[in-house]
Length: 102
Image (cartoon, rainbow, N blue to C red):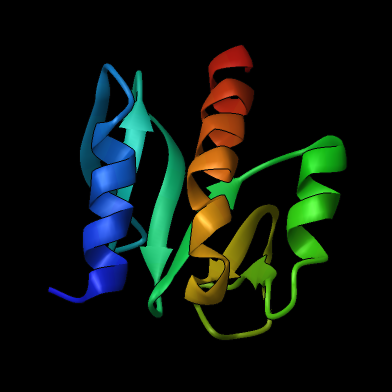
């Protein structure tokens, strides 16, 4: 397991009631059956909206999550590279809040 994967799992397990699962064949954490974070290409992926979504997307190297690789990105999901690992927990908390409110 890579250090990136280890950090992703460590963050996901910090949230009470979160459970490890799969989304599009990729590892994810869900809350009440809804995915809020995932892991793809050594980056963490977050379901976000509003100003937090904009903030995440403006980080250097961040991009909309395109798990198929066919230029069909998921508009609410932002893939943030490991270089921003210090922000991963913050965005995971925001993603959990967003998904829980839906």
